[in-house]
Picture 1 (cartoon, rainbow, N blue to C red):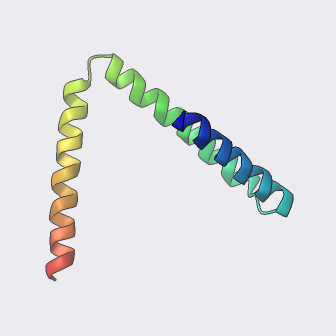
Picture 2 (cartoon, rainbow, N blue to C red; picture 1 turned 180 degrees about the vertical axis):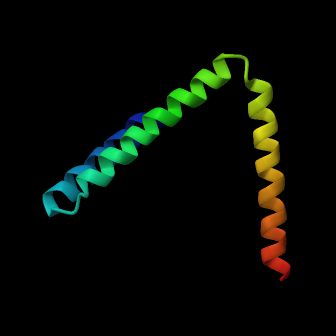
Amino acid sequence: MAKVVNTCTNLGALVAFIAGGHVLWGLGIVLALANIAGAQLGARTVLGGGTKLIRYALLTLVIVMSLYLSWQQWS
């Protein structure tokens, strides 16, 4: 049910922005294509046995972000 509500609110926002003339179509199309390419790459990586790679990448990201936020907090 949450996905249905999310989709409806996104479509409503899109209609409102189109009606107001506040849509940057070129940028939107480029971002949509990048989103599709990233989703395909991620899905193929995981399905190809890359769960170990994803686990290490996520762990690395968490460590780097923790260090960065700690540095930002105390500097």
